[in-house]
Amino acid sequence: MKVKSGESVVLIDSKGKKRTVMAGDKVKKIRHLGFVDLQELVGKPYGSRIQIESRTHWILPPSIVDEIETIRRRTQIILPKDAALICIYCGIRSGYSVLEAGIGSGALTIALANQVAPNGTVISYEKRGDILESAKSNLERVSLEKRVSMNLKDVTEGISERDLDAVILDIPNPCDAVKNAWESLKIGGYLCAYTPLVSQLEDVVKKMRKYPFIEIRSLENLQREMVVGERGTRPNFHMLGHTGYLTFGRKVKE
Ligand SMILES: C[S@@+](CC[C@H](N)C(=O)[O-])C[C@H]1O[C@@H](n2cnc3c(N)ncnc32)[C@H](O)[C@@H]1O
Image 1 (cartoon, rainbow, N blue to C red):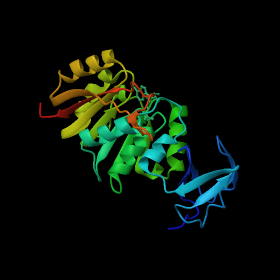
Image 2: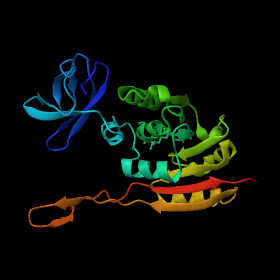
Image 3: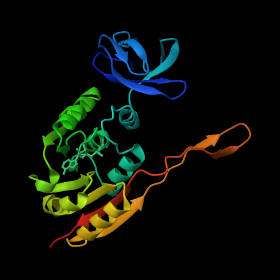
Image 4: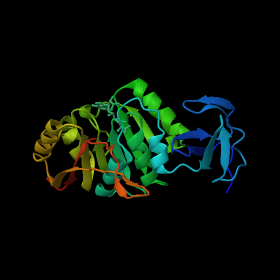
């Protein structure tokens, strides 16, 4: 399989540092990489190597994790470990209609858009125009913009869509959007709130208990990497101690 012009590819060096680029573009200065002739990538077999500024990089098609990890961050993002749990616990699958707020940098959007493909939709609400624009360019870089409907909208002021399969809230005050989420979900649809603070988690759970949601539960998802050395194996000294709590609930009839 060879790289085609206009394809998104990931360049990974021997230390695991990676960048996602668009093959076929002109020479570009890429942060932490230097000048790269993106036309040179076209026709190269996937899995082969390329020298960039004296460092070797492997050329691969980007995985969902690559797409999220190489995103340009304008906000805090939902990391792959939490995005994976959101997709599984909300039962998100191909063909689903899923709403998220806010879009932020578009990291969770990437996971959702891949999951609902090829016929599903991700509807993203974001209340800041500048953030919406940068999320749009992040999604364009990984060719996912056509799968996402991006709206400059405050989710606490209302959700126009109905019969949604899932609503995911990553905003500072998710409790203020619980009523709108309940109204927009189909029966059996899931609400998920991602909250960095315990106080936000408590507020959202208390609010969800006022509506017909069942299976309300909050999870913390801890992950640590193992290091395999010559003399033994141990957990990595560095661990991302905390990201956010995930609260889930499922809509039933009034
Ligand atoms: C932490 S970021 C979201 C990050 C995103 N989930 C990601 O993975 O890249 C939170 C975003 O929510 C937006 N936001 C905050 N309150 C909102 C609201 N009521 N309606 C829509 N967007 C909102 C903020 O402007 C910000 O961009």
